[in-house]
Length: 559
Image (cartoon, rainbow, N blue to C red; front, side, top):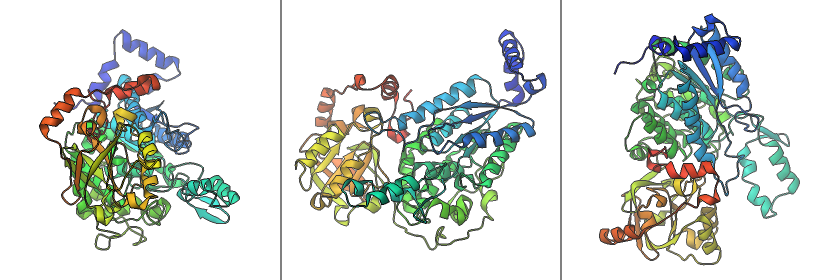
């Protein structure tokens, strides 16, 4: 089908009673007749005063709007939700992941409903960037993402410090093993005024992925939130969106299958957040690409070496990465492994954007022939316990657990599992099943608390497996299999496994199976019943649980 032109879209509201009402309302707000005939550009902002990653986006939005006006467009700012994963309580309402789908819906309602010709989207943090990218893929109009940059380092007792070094001391303080004044100084001084926290958690990871798939201007994802360069990038995005509108370059022409595969490869090169396992497939499926995305993660993990050892796992910060040349330098180093012919929001190819990008520090951003590590970072396991796949952090598995066989111990909540662990109810060699923690069952809760407590019991840590439909934390270690898909709340095999069933895991073969016959599984499935306890949660979370789909497809709406 032929693509709609700007003139076609404009004809939707050029005459008729509704159109004249709209024209009158615009004139009534003080816009001129001349402005109403300019292309209408939505400046989709997620600014608020509570999320440090977004508290400065009002300033960047003004620069975007200036660029749009100078290039002949009419910018109109609209807003979306933007909660910070570090600011919201995790229990009992784990709302951060569900907010992502809501953000995509908000953009659809506002931008699609108001006939905007293009949009510039401003976001920084965990679920907001993927929510905006999902909306861009869904609406398929000319779009540029402006990411808000990384947070400046804190300063404590005469030294620059990363926030993660203060965050790591919470448990130490709880045990009384750190001077309270030093701890308070770290908490008070380790976070900067605005921007994404300075390590490779989900915020910076998703900003980098937006650039890797061509949806930001070059270098934007690794700029400081307090730099002149990010304000200039915002202004240039305002100018550039007008060119995309004029040329009819829409989001899906940029967010192609190859572009998303490029992002997955960059994910491996920087050891990005494990939450990308959810977010990149969600973006792809919103664009209409129904492919086995988790397999591509597994393939990329075996192909792409780690080129930057960034915190929290490594010694360098995102500031160090920026000083070394940033994402442009990383993409240049990876070009032999990427599809350099993918289109970007500059109107040029990825190769044209970065082929001459310099690298200023070969230890922070390594060349392909001198990587930090060539070991695969993640693996995707398949079998009758995880028909759609499950995710394993291979590098974190103890050597003696690369093959495993043990009897299942099943718990229907994280708390049940913790209670058993703390009371001595877990035994060496157990296959510990923590279920109903996925998106439908518990909004994507992590099993990190259980993993950390198990790590403190060496005999169990080095002999047990954890199998969960919950999410991972960046600090996941041990034989911890997560994101098991379909999740238990969908009536999957994970819901049907029972205490005592034998579980076998073979990491090299990427397999995870239970020794239960198909006939027995069918019998158990016929007797299966699970009901979401809606009375425990507010209306939106009930709606989310009722409609969210498989994690392997990114947890988008199952419609």
